Image (cartoon, rainbow, N blue to C red; front, side, top):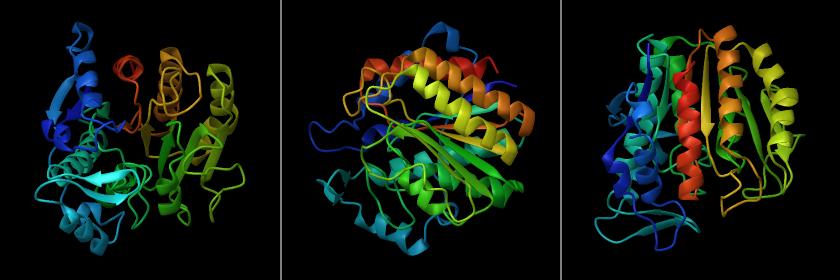
Length: 309
Protein backbone atom coordinates (compact mmCIF):
# COMPACT_ATOMS: atom_id res chain seq x y z
CA UNK A 1 0.00 0.00 0.00
CA UNK A 2 1.22 3.48 -0.80
CA UNK A 3 0.86 6.91 0.74
CA UNK A 4 -2.08 8.88 -0.67
CA UNK A 5 -1.80 12.60 -1.45
CA UNK A 6 -5.05 14.54 -1.69
CA UNK A 7 -5.38 18.13 -2.90
CA UNK A 8 -7.52 20.23 -5.23
CA UNK A 9 -6.96 23.33 -7.40
CA UNK A 10 -10.09 24.94 -5.91
CA UNK A 11 -8.12 25.48 -2.71
CA UNK A 12 -6.09 28.10 -4.58
CA UNK A 13 -9.28 30.15 -5.06
CA UNK A 14 -9.71 30.91 -1.37
CA UNK A 15 -8.40 34.47 -1.34
CA UNK A 16 -7.44 36.57 1.67
CA UNK A 17 -6.62 40.28 1.99
CA UNK A 18 -3.33 41.51 0.50
CA UNK A 19 -0.38 40.58 2.68
CA UNK A 20 -2.24 37.87 4.60
CA UNK A 21 0.08 34.96 5.50
CA UNK A 22 -2.48 32.23 4.69
CA UNK A 23 -2.22 32.64 0.94
CA UNK A 24 -2.56 30.43 -2.15
CA UNK A 25 1.20 30.45 -2.67
CA UNK A 26 1.47 28.08 0.30
CA UNK A 27 -0.13 25.29 -1.72
CA UNK A 28 1.84 26.14 -4.84
CA UNK A 29 5.08 25.81 -2.86
CA UNK A 30 3.97 22.40 -1.56
CA UNK A 31 2.98 21.28 -5.05
CA UNK A 32 6.41 22.21 -6.40
CA UNK A 33 8.15 20.34 -3.59
CA UNK A 34 6.09 17.19 -4.19
CA UNK A 35 6.87 17.22 -7.92
CA UNK A 36 10.36 15.95 -7.08
CA UNK A 37 11.20 12.52 -8.53
CA UNK A 38 11.31 10.89 -5.10
CA UNK A 39 7.57 11.49 -4.75
CA UNK A 40 6.60 9.76 -7.98
CA UNK A 41 5.33 6.74 -6.02
CA UNK A 42 2.71 8.82 -4.22
CA UNK A 43 -0.86 7.88 -5.09
CA UNK A 44 -2.56 11.17 -5.97
CA UNK A 45 -6.25 12.07 -5.97
CA UNK A 46 -8.29 15.25 -6.11
CA UNK A 47 -10.12 16.01 -2.88
CA UNK A 48 -13.89 15.56 -3.32
CA UNK A 49 -16.54 17.94 -2.02
CA UNK A 50 -17.59 17.09 1.52
CA UNK A 51 -21.33 16.60 2.05
CA UNK A 52 -22.70 19.09 4.56
CA UNK A 53 -24.00 16.19 6.68
CA UNK A 54 -20.44 14.96 7.24
CA UNK A 55 -19.29 18.42 8.34
CA UNK A 56 -22.31 18.56 10.66
CA UNK A 57 -20.89 15.68 12.71
CA UNK A 58 -18.41 18.21 14.12
CA UNK A 59 -20.37 21.48 13.74
CA UNK A 60 -24.09 22.27 14.12
CA UNK A 61 -25.86 22.26 10.75
CA UNK A 62 -27.09 25.80 11.50
CA UNK A 63 -23.46 26.93 11.64
CA UNK A 64 -22.53 25.05 8.47
CA UNK A 65 -25.39 26.74 6.61
CA UNK A 66 -24.46 30.11 8.12
CA UNK A 67 -20.92 29.81 6.72
CA UNK A 68 -22.27 28.72 3.33
CA UNK A 69 -24.68 31.63 3.22
CA UNK A 70 -21.97 34.12 4.19
CA UNK A 71 -20.07 33.31 0.99
CA UNK A 72 -19.82 36.48 -1.13
CA UNK A 73 -20.53 36.59 -4.86
CA UNK A 74 -17.74 39.15 -5.24
CA UNK A 75 -15.21 40.89 -3.04
CA UNK A 76 -14.48 39.68 0.46
CA UNK A 77 -16.44 39.12 3.68
CA UNK A 78 -14.58 39.31 6.99
CA UNK A 79 -15.71 36.76 9.61
CA UNK A 80 -13.28 37.87 12.30
CA UNK A 81 -10.13 39.97 12.50
CA UNK A 82 -8.06 37.52 10.46
CA UNK A 83 -10.57 35.14 8.81
CA UNK A 84 -12.24 36.13 5.55
CA UNK A 85 -14.27 34.57 2.74
CA UNK A 86 -13.94 35.24 -0.98
CA UNK A 87 -16.18 33.83 -3.75
CA UNK A 88 -13.97 30.72 -3.94
CA UNK A 89 -13.75 30.07 -0.22
CA UNK A 90 -16.75 27.82 0.32
CA UNK A 91 -15.68 25.31 -2.33
CA UNK A 92 -12.17 25.37 -0.84
CA UNK A 93 -13.47 24.52 2.64
CA UNK A 94 -15.64 21.75 1.20
CA UNK A 95 -12.60 20.34 -0.63
CA UNK A 96 -10.46 20.56 2.53
CA UNK A 97 -13.09 18.70 4.56
CA UNK A 98 -13.73 16.33 1.65
CA UNK A 99 -10.04 15.52 1.39
CA UNK A 100 -10.02 14.63 5.08
CA UNK A 101 -13.07 12.37 4.61
CA UNK A 102 -11.58 10.63 1.58
CA UNK A 103 -8.27 10.11 3.37
CA UNK A 104 -10.09 8.47 6.28
CA UNK A 105 -12.05 6.24 3.90
CA UNK A 106 -8.93 5.07 2.07
CA UNK A 107 -6.83 4.52 5.19
CA UNK A 108 -9.57 2.89 7.29
CA UNK A 109 -10.56 0.77 4.29
CA UNK A 110 -7.01 -0.51 3.87
CA UNK A 111 -6.54 0.94 0.39
CA UNK A 112 -3.80 3.37 1.47
CA UNK A 113 -1.29 2.91 4.27
CA UNK A 114 -1.52 6.58 5.24
CA UNK A 115 -2.49 9.90 3.66
CA UNK A 116 -1.51 13.55 3.52
CA UNK A 117 -4.15 16.15 2.68
CA UNK A 118 -2.62 19.31 1.18
CA UNK A 119 -5.53 21.73 1.22
CA UNK A 120 -6.40 25.13 2.62
CA UNK A 121 -7.83 26.89 4.56
CA UNK A 122 -6.62 25.13 7.72
CA UNK A 123 -9.05 24.00 10.39
CA UNK A 124 -7.80 23.48 13.94
CA UNK A 125 -8.86 26.89 15.33
CA UNK A 126 -12.50 26.46 14.23
CA UNK A 127 -14.62 25.78 17.31
CA UNK A 128 -18.04 24.11 17.38
CA UNK A 129 -19.79 27.18 15.96
CA UNK A 130 -17.06 29.83 15.67
CA UNK A 131 -14.69 30.54 12.77
CA UNK A 132 -11.35 31.99 13.82
CA UNK A 133 -7.63 32.01 13.14
CA UNK A 134 -7.94 31.53 9.36
CA UNK A 135 -10.21 28.48 9.98
CA UNK A 136 -13.91 27.92 9.13
CA UNK A 137 -14.49 24.17 9.58
CA UNK A 138 -12.35 21.89 11.75
CA UNK A 139 -11.02 19.28 9.34
CA UNK A 140 -9.37 17.14 12.01
CA UNK A 141 -12.60 16.98 14.00
CA UNK A 142 -14.58 16.16 10.85
CA UNK A 143 -12.10 13.37 10.06
CA UNK A 144 -12.30 11.93 13.58
CA UNK A 145 -16.10 11.93 13.63
CA UNK A 146 -16.20 10.34 10.16
CA UNK A 147 -13.86 7.54 11.27
CA UNK A 148 -16.23 6.83 14.13
CA UNK A 149 -19.52 7.16 12.23
CA UNK A 150 -18.57 5.54 8.92
CA UNK A 151 -15.86 3.07 9.94
CA UNK A 152 -16.68 2.09 13.50
CA UNK A 153 -13.52 3.53 15.06
CA UNK A 154 -13.95 3.43 18.83
CA UNK A 155 -11.11 5.80 19.66
CA UNK A 156 -9.40 8.43 17.50
CA UNK A 157 -6.36 10.50 18.48
CA UNK A 158 -5.56 13.92 17.03
CA UNK A 159 -1.92 15.00 17.38
CA UNK A 160 -1.26 18.66 16.59
CA UNK A 161 2.27 20.01 16.16
CA UNK A 162 1.27 23.38 14.68
CA UNK A 163 2.98 26.21 16.54
CA UNK A 164 -0.44 27.61 17.52
CA UNK A 165 -2.64 25.63 19.90
CA UNK A 166 -5.66 24.02 18.27
CA UNK A 167 -8.26 25.59 20.51
CA UNK A 168 -11.05 24.44 18.20
CA UNK A 169 -10.10 20.78 18.35
CA UNK A 170 -9.72 21.02 22.13
CA UNK A 171 -13.11 22.71 22.53
CA UNK A 172 -14.96 20.27 20.28
CA UNK A 173 -13.65 17.20 22.14
CA UNK A 174 -13.37 18.64 25.67
CA UNK A 175 -16.11 16.36 27.02
CA UNK A 176 -15.41 13.35 24.79
CA UNK A 177 -13.76 10.19 26.14
CA UNK A 178 -13.48 8.68 22.64
CA UNK A 179 -11.20 11.31 21.06
CA UNK A 180 -7.82 12.26 22.49
CA UNK A 181 -6.33 15.63 21.52
CA UNK A 182 -2.57 16.11 21.98
CA UNK A 183 -0.72 19.32 21.17
CA UNK A 184 2.73 20.86 21.22
CA UNK A 185 2.67 24.62 20.65
CA UNK A 186 4.36 27.86 21.62
CA UNK A 187 2.90 29.53 24.69
CA UNK A 188 2.13 32.33 25.26
CA UNK A 189 0.94 32.84 21.71
CA UNK A 190 -2.33 33.05 19.78
CA UNK A 191 -4.99 31.86 20.61
CA UNK A 192 -4.00 31.82 24.31
CA UNK A 193 -5.22 28.31 25.13
CA UNK A 194 -3.23 25.12 25.66
CA UNK A 195 -1.92 25.25 29.23
CA UNK A 196 -0.69 22.06 30.88
CA UNK A 197 -3.63 22.24 33.25
CA UNK A 198 -6.20 22.05 30.41
CA UNK A 199 -6.92 18.32 30.42
CA UNK A 200 -10.55 18.05 29.34
CA UNK A 201 -13.54 16.71 31.26
CA UNK A 202 -12.47 13.11 30.55
CA UNK A 203 -8.68 13.58 30.82
CA UNK A 204 -8.28 13.16 27.05
CA UNK A 205 -6.64 16.55 26.38
CA UNK A 206 -2.83 16.49 26.48
CA UNK A 207 -1.05 19.83 26.15
CA UNK A 208 2.73 20.14 26.03
CA UNK A 209 3.44 23.88 25.65
CA UNK A 210 6.84 25.14 24.57
CA UNK A 211 8.48 28.52 25.20
CA UNK A 212 9.64 31.05 22.61
CA UNK A 213 13.14 30.13 21.51
CA UNK A 214 12.71 26.39 22.09
CA UNK A 215 14.03 24.12 19.35
CA UNK A 216 14.20 20.48 18.40
CA UNK A 217 15.55 19.21 21.73
CA UNK A 218 12.71 20.70 23.76
CA UNK A 219 10.14 19.68 21.15
CA UNK A 220 11.33 16.08 21.10
CA UNK A 221 11.42 15.89 24.89
CA UNK A 222 7.84 17.18 25.09
CA UNK A 223 6.64 14.65 22.54
CA UNK A 224 8.57 11.78 24.15
CA UNK A 225 7.53 12.47 27.74
CA UNK A 226 4.08 14.07 27.54
CA UNK A 227 2.44 12.83 24.34
CA UNK A 228 3.72 9.45 23.16
CA UNK A 229 3.02 7.55 26.42
CA UNK A 230 -0.53 8.94 26.60
CA UNK A 231 -1.11 8.17 22.94
CA UNK A 232 0.14 4.62 23.36
CA UNK A 233 -2.07 4.08 26.40
CA UNK A 234 -5.12 5.44 24.61
CA UNK A 235 -4.62 2.86 21.83
CA UNK A 236 -6.44 4.75 19.08
CA UNK A 237 -7.89 3.06 15.99
CA UNK A 238 -6.68 6.01 13.89
CA UNK A 239 -4.19 8.84 14.38
CA UNK A 240 -5.08 12.15 12.74
CA UNK A 241 -2.18 14.62 12.52
CA UNK A 242 -2.87 18.34 12.50
CA UNK A 243 0.29 19.02 10.54
CA UNK A 244 1.21 22.66 10.93
CA UNK A 245 4.76 23.61 9.97
CA UNK A 246 4.90 27.09 11.50
CA UNK A 247 7.14 25.97 14.36
CA UNK A 248 9.90 25.96 11.72
CA UNK A 249 12.82 28.29 12.47
CA UNK A 250 12.07 30.34 9.33
CA UNK A 251 8.40 30.97 10.08
CA UNK A 252 7.43 34.63 10.63
CA UNK A 253 4.41 34.07 12.91
CA UNK A 254 6.13 32.47 15.91
CA UNK A 255 9.45 31.87 17.65
CA UNK A 256 10.18 28.15 17.79
CA UNK A 257 13.22 26.74 16.02
CA UNK A 258 12.27 23.39 14.50
CA UNK A 259 13.94 22.15 11.33
CA UNK A 260 13.01 19.50 8.79
CA UNK A 261 14.67 16.70 10.77
CA UNK A 262 12.31 17.38 13.67
CA UNK A 263 9.28 16.86 11.42
CA UNK A 264 10.79 13.64 10.09
CA UNK A 265 11.36 12.46 13.66
CA UNK A 266 7.88 13.25 14.99
CA UNK A 267 6.25 11.68 11.93
CA UNK A 268 8.23 8.48 12.49
CA UNK A 269 7.36 8.43 16.20
CA UNK A 270 3.64 8.82 15.50
CA UNK A 271 3.80 6.10 12.87
CA UNK A 272 5.45 3.77 15.38
CA UNK A 273 2.50 4.24 17.75
CA UNK A 274 0.11 3.76 14.84
CA UNK A 275 1.88 0.52 13.90
CA UNK A 276 1.50 -0.79 17.47
CA UNK A 277 -2.01 0.42 18.17
CA UNK A 278 -3.86 1.43 14.97
CA UNK A 279 -2.78 -1.04 12.31
CA UNK A 280 -0.53 1.72 10.92
CA UNK A 281 -3.44 4.06 10.15
CA UNK A 282 -2.40 7.73 9.93
CA UNK A 283 -4.20 10.63 8.23
CA UNK A 284 -2.27 13.91 8.13
CA UNK A 285 -3.98 17.23 7.41
CA UNK A 286 -2.17 20.45 6.52
CA UNK A 287 -2.63 23.25 9.05
CA UNK A 288 -0.25 26.24 9.26
CA UNK A 289 3.20 27.09 7.90
CA UNK A 290 3.78 30.52 6.40
CA UNK A 291 7.39 30.75 5.24
CA UNK A 292 7.23 29.17 1.80
CA UNK A 293 10.69 27.63 1.86
CA UNK A 294 10.35 26.33 5.40
CA UNK A 295 6.87 25.01 4.61
CA UNK A 296 7.81 23.21 1.40
CA UNK A 297 10.94 21.62 2.88
CA UNK A 298 9.08 20.53 6.01
CA UNK A 299 6.17 19.02 4.08
CA UNK A 300 8.67 17.15 1.89
CA UNK A 301 10.33 15.72 5.02
CA UNK A 302 6.94 14.79 6.53
CA UNK A 303 5.64 13.10 3.39
CA UNK A 304 8.95 11.27 2.85
CA UNK A 305 8.61 9.81 6.36
CA UNK A 306 5.00 8.79 5.65
CA UNK A 307 6.09 7.04 2.45
CA UNK A 308 8.79 5.08 4.28
CA UNK A 309 6.34 3.82 6.88
